[in-house]
Image (tube, rainbow, N blue to C red; front, side, top):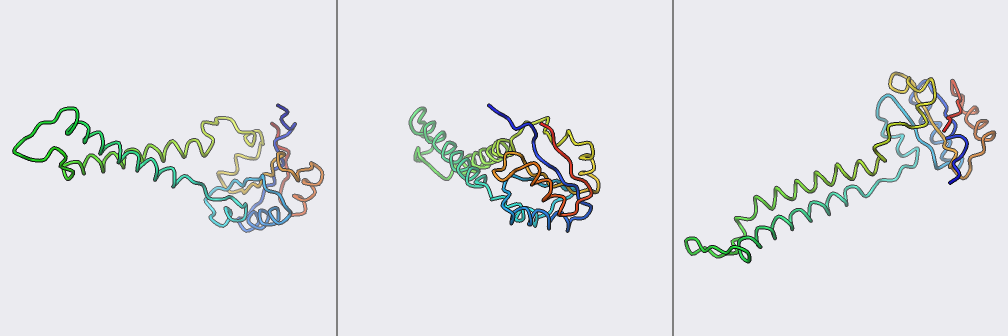
Length: 178
């Protein structure tokens, strides 16, 4: 597999308005493979980067439904088929007594599905990322804002992309090594 010689180009900005404007400009220019790093969450940046919403909520719903069905039918199988015991003339399939366990299994499976889905969706575990090779990147947790256009983008041309990023007037433009 041929990996690009570099991961991408990263521009450093001093203000949240600057990175928001830079992400919108890059999106209008046609770049799609990019990411932004900020010291605090910025909801507007998600739209500016063109990040689409995931199907994680649908996955969690399916896990919850599966957990509820497993919980209900596990009790049904135990009470009606495997070990039927008639106590006090109650019917074997008394569904109201199955509700607490069914509810708990729904919540358990949905929570486990959310954690597992989030881990896979975020590409974890990934202890080493190429952006950590940039010396100034540690400032992303303090007071600087970074926009990285990845080399895997179809429009990526090292010289043209670097010129584009410099036209956005960042404080630094850095090559991100693989």
